[in-house]
Image 1 (cartoon, each protein chain N blue to C red):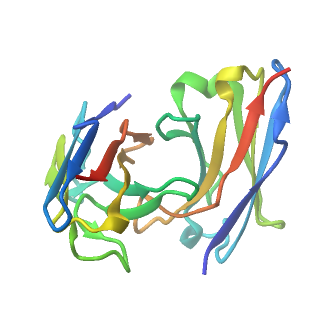
Image 2: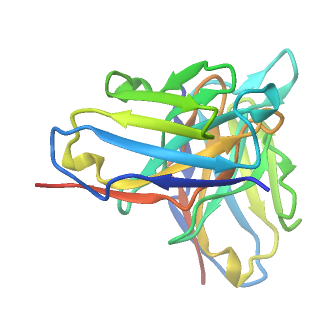
Length: 112
Length: 121
């Protein structure tokens, strides 16, 4: 089974500043035949369902603000919020979908 | 527009079986374009945990640690996916979500609002 880890567990960033979340998989989620990383990022706010932000590690879902970006390949990935807004306060999860599925433990993002 | 809605009991006794239904619209699970429907849960104060997924071609996959207790099925005529979990324990108390997996995206692009299931006597 592929296990996902995230760091940090929580972070507080000033409004307008950059927030960076890291995700690591215990095995590579890069499928060599199509050169795609089977890695997604979700935003989860209390009382709401999770919202897909990024898939294939770096493709932004339709309607997601461009301040959200994903990068990385193989086993190491990053979600960056370039300029934190109040509406970005949430828990962020990475998830692999390489054969089966698994979520990371989540990173709570707050305003400093 | 894709929509999904979970339904089922809110309170279940320990050792009993839980049956949850996901009723969806906006896609068909009988063709390739339908992708798949999965179940994910979140215990109070804890992280998301993927449980099971059924594909349009009836292929199924389960989280290994709970595989012996889970069954996922689909009824394409009713646009429903059903998850059955046996031998419930208070640790299974959680909000249960169903979600659509689009083949081209790979990830869960649309989610239901979730339903809270409490396991207690």
